[in-house]
Image (tube, rainbow, N blue to C red):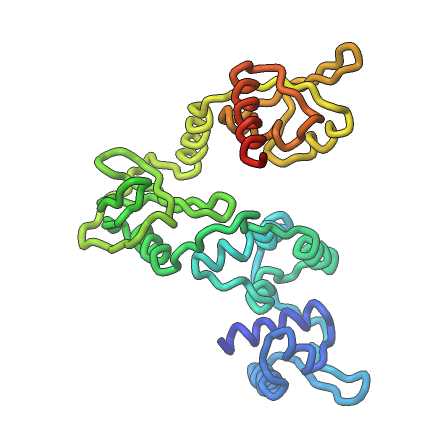
Length: 315
């Protein structure tokens, strides 16, 4: 919008004192001709703005002219510039904040504040994409879910489970993004449940509206739900004897945490918890002769069986 662009020009000149029409056009993604028309518009509004020609020329504000759009403090300004990850904004259909929008928050920020903001944008990047290839969320379905949440409308979804696909009627309460994966939280038959958005095959807004529970807090629900889920996952503690040459590699692995390290008679023993017996066996198998399972005994027997299967396969 032209009004946004005029404000952006004022903010840029306020920050940088003087810019060329070409520099302004690049920053605001419009033509140089449009910039000159905007300068005329600002001048007609009584803004003391001039354009000097020549090698050292440019567009600048006269005197100490200053405009301030905000009264927010430094920490509030910085919080606006912490990146949230392009994927989240893209999934939600929200356009990434451009310079023209961000400048509105700067107001009369000092040069040091502006420099720190630029550092935040350049030094911190949050990548919400998973290392593994995942199914992209349907923008149409996610948009329908958002509309239902904002408008307190009941949803009719077709939800895919492992062995069946079923129709579900629910009152949507919120959306959660966990490592780039979206989840819908909704009230179904008076029970709050979580649905993976990529498993929703279709979603339709119904005519019925609902009253959102006043005591429901999405963040608290998610933290309690995930904590309960983790507590219900059975844990299998493995004791390994490891060669010192692989110890640092094990320590640096993602999702692997050594709970105990003991050195006895120059031998290194470590304890690691796994969510399943197979995970612990697979972990040991990958290091070959450099690691030995000491406990549990059932894992030792299963590893022997697997090893014999491999040997017989390649005879």
